[in-house]
Amino acid sequence: MIKVVGAKGIIQDVDLFLKKVRDFAKNHDIVVQVFNADMIYSKNHILSAVKHAVRSHERKTNTTNSLDMEILLYASGERQLKLAIPKMGVRTGDVNIAFVFVDEVQRASGSLSDKKVVEFIKLLNLVRDDSVLNGNVDTLKKFGITSSELETVTKAKYGDLILEKVARVDIIK
Image (cartoon, rainbow, N blue to C red):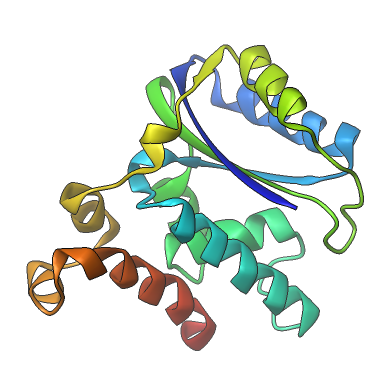
């Protein structure tokens, strides 16, 4: 099971926020990754990153030792965490957040109901808002996609440009 969820709210302490995310994942025996949703173009962006990360662990071609960090690498289109974290990581202040919850993969054997996801988001003092997962041209440009690249496809295919960056991580590893 893979669940992708958006949320909005205020983060005052990133370390405390991430500790709560890690504790929740451990307590439910699942993998959770959290992103700055302003860098996410769509649910497909995250789902593609998860599929690539899972495959890299299965094939033993992973860069990191943990599935959550591997997901972050793929979602960022980067091959190094030192570039991926500043690009995709959460920040303090008024934020848009994207979560991905993954179970039944590798060491994650727990399960997670929609009710638990809602409770978790409330625990973090966030409000669920999946609209933050809908990127636009500004998202693409912040992600590093150039105007020249945008001109090569129709607007209906803009999401494919992000998916290419995700897939490209396999090549640049």
